[in-house]
Image 1: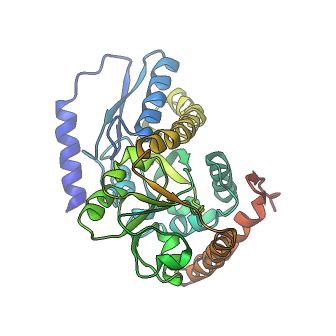
Image 2: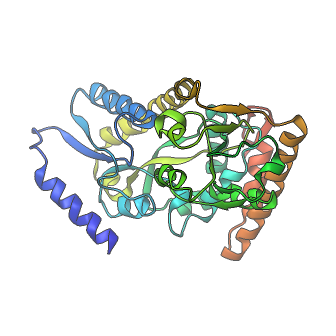
Image 3: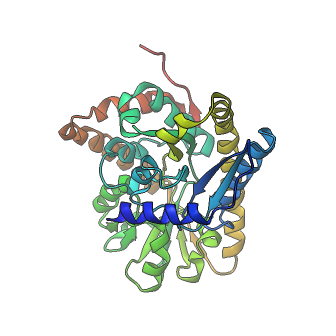
Length: 343
């Protein structure tokens, strides 16, 4: 029913679209974020590059603020042509992305955005299950992010022990980690977190400093525990395969070249957003630091549970252990990523 509603909305928007001049191909790009968000700024840089590089023969028409794609159905909606290109978040998708969700828990040691993307590319190259879960889509960009910490409403966190009993929003791969630490973790789209914090539905969120400004979290939470929480990269911008195949060879070649441009723009905007967020929290946010022992304990627990989660994928017929081994063998040192030799 929701997919049908999305298709009807897409048809309505198509009917309202301006006439495209002869010789010009226009593609829609749908994102849940407003134009002011760092992700959207990177998206706009990519759109400008596409139009300039094509000489105006290929243009991207953005649809901002979640008007077209949903968080949990975005991949299926793209497969059905609701939008031509869209922002996807596989961790929120209902079914069919088991490894894509779990692999985000393999990234300890990949601290920078560039290292996270490089590590994902190693798995993309050597783990066939990833391409199976992305069937029907053409991936145009992979995205990493800033290392998050723990942002809480009222109760400051000074150690891992202080997390006990706290209801904290976290990504899928961190839910068992936080449970083992005695917290009560939940998962929800980031767009719902502000309201949940404001209403006291949750006590905190695993989030990086850029959210202080981008998602206005300092209006509802003012304590930040600077635990370095590993985070993964994921395929984040995609196009439906049917629409991709309908493009000309030249258009596909241009979009292939644009992937590096888009990923670089995302990296630059994400890195710049950290200081913007910290500036927004100045005089509002109280920062606390973990001890070296707590940080090491968290890192060890993260990898132990990441491996256990990988093993549990066997019940779906997925060799998660093989994916975990590829990932960990590719981390040669802190922020040193090198894919292994092909077998």
